[in-house]
Image (cartoon, rainbow, N blue to C red):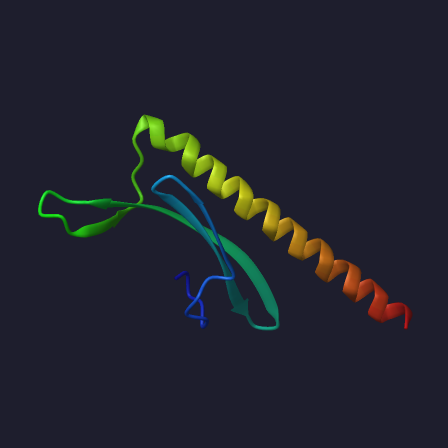
Length: 90
């Protein structure tokens, strides 16, 4: 969970069996947004597992999910910067 005090991600992005999650990480007064990516699969016994290793055909899915997470992080940072600018002028 990337050192996060929150137990749930801020957002999830899914493509096939690949998921990226967006996390908030507080460092002092600052908040840093991060992303993690994983795939879910069933082993031979039918148990669900997670992995951070991707086959050739799964790489585009991971890229897609991470791209969506990146878009959301930039969007939130832009909103935060806009809000901070508005606060200064009030």
